[in-house]
Image: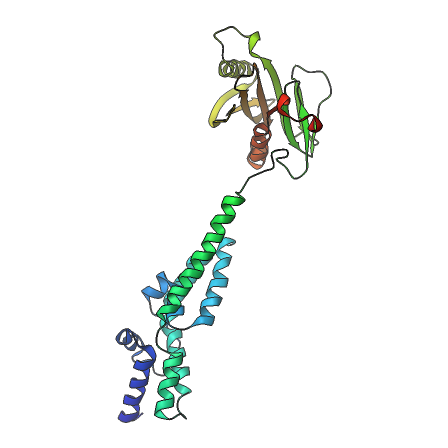
Length: 316
């Protein structure tokens, strides 16, 4: 390449790059033939989508955005994409520059300048438009979360397929694979899964049956003390919940205990309602491995507790 050709190329390259040409000329220096190389571009790493749009690589920006969506499914994809763009941004931008300049070899000087300006340079407006699009998409996501929060369930059914079992005063919603024990027991409601691996029992108590100084929470403590005498190595693990919403309070604790050489987890819950003289104590059990898998089911069953009096007659 002659000196005149080199000067002509540099003028075109500077016109193509526009802002920050000195940086890219330094990154490309000595790489006239070798087009594939690794370097580092901080702007492309931190803001890859905006950098691509700013440098008029619109198709690449769309592809980056689509692949980045996988980050919502596959953890780490977003970070990997940022790193790859940061490493190869200068190399890929170099390829784009050479491709555009190659298209101008048969054009007049004026036509070449117009072609380079059209396909090169920067697009500040594109950053603003991209920001508005991203803000709009974020607004849609936030609105979706607000209108349809994760875990929100219909008041009459916490599960896709469910059934309702009741004591005289309380109603509970169970998944469809649960059954009610019909034999007479000390429990007011006794339910199992069909494989009998998960258990839920309910005591329906009248506060009038306790001494005047005993509150429902005290009754819960008395019941836990009773369980300690029935199981070996009965130990407290953690408080799972203590929440009052409107007129209802739910308190749940988790214990572990051994029976016949096996360990079980026990969730013990209190459900009480304001201005109501009845309260429920719910005990649930499963092996530790099954508990971890079905913890949310146990919690949903307890959360479904409602006073029978408040249930419309047609739903009883």
